Length: 353
Image (tube, rainbow, N blue to C red; front, side, top):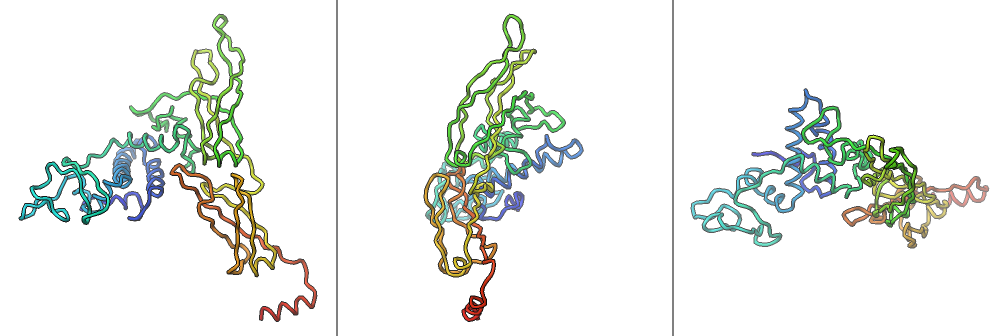
């Protein structure tokens, strides 16, 4: 039967790229051999290899199509054996078997992909791990929500992505000392992206006295749209020069300033809109200013809004690396009148009963 890659990652067969990445990140961090004790190392190596192989296949459109149709054996072993009429056994058939085959159209149409006659050979799990987590941060981190701050796993391991979890492995890199500077950023800048100039104080060794001399230097901090609080932006050898000659890395730790309207929730934004009881019952139109200065119309005229109701406005959240955006989640706070006159109560009873 072969391995069930979907089951290994714990995802459905229609899982998109984001779901696959999320599952891989969680499992890869859990089962990375450098994070597991010696007694559990053999099992961790096996699990880590399975997780990496599953993600490598399912995250590749071509490999995933082949796997979905022919399973692990078809993916790794090359084409199915020729049938009695000399065709390859694929839908539509390829006379003369598989040699020289360069492309395949499922069902006579759709996406074209290449299938090598040698079959699929999985990459080194550690290489894949390093590649995936480096791409996530783009050099700026990106492990939020996994038990580490954005980029924290890399900063603790010298940027390699391989452990400093108590036991050295041949893949581990020496730990680099850091000078960490916290830098608060407005939600607007985290939404739109920005380039910030920051003057930082550092100490350099005097060539003659070998003593540390305070100095000031300006660095330019690139804020990509959608960057999260907790992300670390590293400037190699821009920290203090230590007496032993080692130079620290300067690490800018991104913090998020509180916003008076929006609250960030991962890639989503949350906002509370106050409604009068009349608006909740009869409908309303409200305009809110977005983080990039647009006027966004929020309206409801077809239903009654009850306390605690939330409305999702798609693609109005924070930017993602994929180019999409998260959602804006609107929560309604209904203001009830402090008191009603007897006539108002009587009128309401007539209307509502």
